[in-house]
Each structure stands twice: as structure tokens, then as C-alpha cells.
Amino acid sequence: MVAFKRLDRKFGQGDPEFWKEIMMLSRYTHENLISLLGYCNEGGEMILVYEHVSKDSLDRHLSSTTLTHSLKRVLHRDIKIPNILLDENWNAKVSDMGLSKLGPANQQHTALMTNAVGTPGYYDPLYMELGYLTKESDVYSFGVVLLEVLFGKLCYEYINGQYQLLVRMWKKGYEENNIDQFIFHYLKQQMDSSSLKSFSDIASECLKRSRDERPPMADVEIYEKVKLPTDYKEIIKTAVPTLNYGSEVLKKILLKGTLLNSGKSGLQLT
Image (cartoon, rainbow, N blue to C red; front, side, top):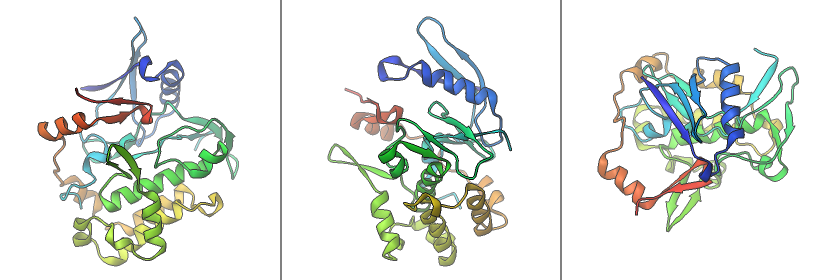
């Protein structure tokens, strides 16, 4: 079984993103990177063929109550929860490399000047202000993902026909020592308060405005493993959340409309 991604030029998905995705996934392999199996570029069609991941993307499981080396550095530029896919063993795989950039890995600070792209709510504020990309920009985006997992919801809400970003409110709650109000209620039942505090501390470090104050991703990985229970992998494997939206829920989502392609296009039933 495989998965297909069909790009559409009329929604702003062009050749550069298509060929960048092919180049990056052909050049790099990693257990936490989605595998590209093939592609089609004929008759005006641009189709990518990926390995199938049975657990879907991480955003589908946010509120589930059953969940308890190289010469080049890849800067993803669009780290967000829908781009983190889960296989049958709940291993995470990063997808959507169409916006990624390459930089030297043998420098303490990898920086590239580039037009600002990404998804609102996830991208580094300094990146959007300066167009100045560093590896710490991906760290910021990952910090947003950590908070989404902690709070059991996406970093934006659809209110009165507009998308409202929540990261600023979350950060303010943390700074005022009032973050408990946001934490997913089921996590409060499954984790002790010190672990929840440690998790939120790590996410907050990733969201520092100063890039120099954000931790390296290697440190974030170590911190997260320390805070998780020793049997966390077994706990995750035994979870059986609903993997798909019900027909009525899906219908409501599509009737309201949803953003696609990093907010450049939309889909709505009429």
C-alpha cells in the first residue's frame, strides 16, 4: 500500500516545490523521514508516491484520550503537526520537504537569506521579519508542536470566519505561571505535575525570541526522553485511537472550509 500526493498548479503548487521534494527525499534517508517511492510528471499532472503510514498525521491524535551526520544540514522551513506522520509502530516521520533548504552542517550557526515562507502560527517570528533562516527557526516550529501535544489542540482556531493564532496567548500563560488552564485534561490525569511542568519548560525554551537562547534539537530530544516514562513506547503502541474523522465531522469541516498548501489555497463544499 502506498500514499499519493497530487499537486495542483492552480492552487500555487508549482514545479520548484515538486522537484525540491523529489531531490530532498531522494538524497536523504532517515527513520524519521517519510520515504519517496516514485513520482509522475506527465500530462500536466504532478504526483508524488510515498510509503504508506497507517496512523495518519499527528494532528489527528492531539485530543485522543487513549494516548498516554552529513555534509549538509537540511532546514525544513515548514515544521508543523500535519507534516508529522505516524507509522504502524507510532514512529514519527517528517514529510513535505518542498520548502526545505540546504546549509552547511559543520558550522555552529547555519544561516541562509531567503524569502520567508511557512505556515502561520508555526514559523519563527524573526524569520518572517528578517527573511533570515537558521536551524533555530525549525527549533521554534518544533516548540509549537510540543505545545500542541501538551494542550491537545492545534495552534490556531477558526472563529467568526477567521483563523486566530494561539501561540502568543500560550506563551503569555507560561510567562505568568498560568499554563495549567491550557493543558489537555486527560494528560493531567496521566502525568504528574512535575513532568507536565518540565514538558512546558522545554517547549518554552524552543519558543525563545532570541535564537541564541533556543536549545539545539539534539538537546531537546534528550530532554524529552528523560521526561517520558521508561515504557512510553509500549504505552503508545497499545493505544487505539480513532484513526479517521467520522462522516458527519468531516462534512462539517468541509462545509466550513479548510486551508490547504500552507494557507495559499482553500477547500470548501458548496
